Length: 351
Image (tube, rainbow, N blue to C red; front, top):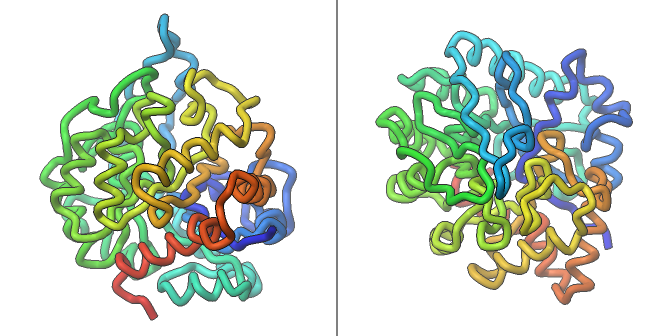
């Protein structure tokens, strides 16, 4: 069963520092390129602009405790560095469209996504993960919107001018720090006005509830799982999941196993089974219904189970859901229909 799908989060652009041609030619590195994505049914994805820390930032497993791990925040980024890096990554995204020969389109409208679902091209949704490259007065936000920005995560797992993410801890509640700053609240309001989706993944719990109280759009966590199954800070509590469902939003279930957001033990485990991922999907369906669950891999920003390997493993995941009792319509909702609904309710230009 091949079903077109929209993926809620990838960091693939970071793999093409020396030019985007290998993305279209194909590469043995990473999780996504155009040939593998096209072969697997990847119709559209959220392509993240992420600013890495310029100094060393070890993985969470480097900070072991008796029960798991507790990684401190990396240092905040300077605005000058983040602005320069953001501009470089946005330019790379635009170059992907310009050098694709019509095979890749920067999605600015729901109609652009629908064209990708129909197989006319692969679409990319420009997403910012951690808004350090946006000034507190939000002038850059308007400029970025004009070039195609349609999704913003106010924070990554560190602090910035808009709020705090969750530090990587296991086991731990996501209630780890203060909520949004005034600048962060203004960012949410301005994203609502422009029609930019707000991504709740990486926000701490107080920041989550700040967005929920301010935003008039569906609540979305693009790459998060169920805290009840895997109690890591990055996953969502039942109360958070319920609020997302009540807002007509969705959760993009992630495949990340380093840091491990999938299995109960939270340990780095590339041997995790596909059923460990589908367990989160069924849990979300049980709490908030089939209309509020989607896919959010975190490809190229994490490690994934060996059984999945890369984007070519997504059809296996969808087939497993069929074997586990979901109908084709259910699977199409998870694969792309739920994303389409949320974007229609969030973006201002639905043509």
